[in-house]
Length: 235
Image 1 (cartoon, rainbow, N blue to C red):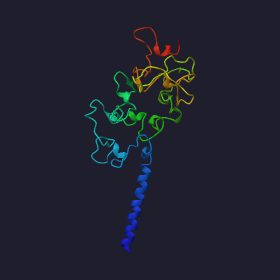
Image 2: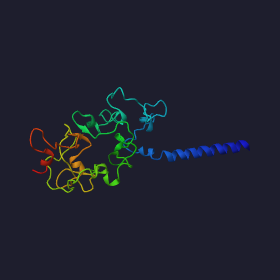
Image 3: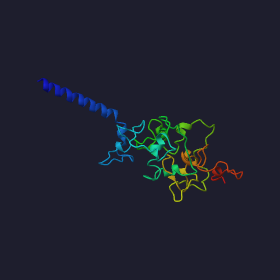
Image 4: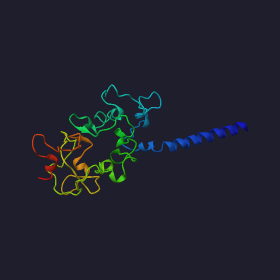
């Protein structure tokens, strides 16, 4: 009888632990079914990036990329292990020479690449749920953090259609110059005809031409008195 009661108790404890783990890991398990669900029979999804033993960093990284990216630290080192074009062409322009990326506080949790991206979710560009309100998970993403930084914002209604409205770093050759228009919701680019001005019309977090405004075209041309990004619409 004692043996039977003992096993019932053990099973109860195991069941409670199992339930607790399920609840605790519910958020992280959101990775299943997303573009980052890279699991195979040999290497399950989580093990693609993490390992519980002999890990290589504070995020329990399964691999150490220091030798491959000696100049990179923080989360960039892990992100670039795939997003440098070697594994996926999505984001490979981030390491292209001459382009600028949004600044981060390297190694600071919530302020590194994870300021805007969470590999465990599958919404707009993997933007973090907690950091970005739903209404900004679109081409007005900048406003989630930069609301109020300037006195007057450019109106978000189209006036003049841009001469160059293509910004496409995945083109061959890559095109890092142009101002795009979007639909009213800001979740779809409008390549021709009438569209709407959003933050991403003029600003890009990856692949900009300057570090100050993260502009998609030069605000001031040092060789002339012109402003390419303004005159692209206002001829």
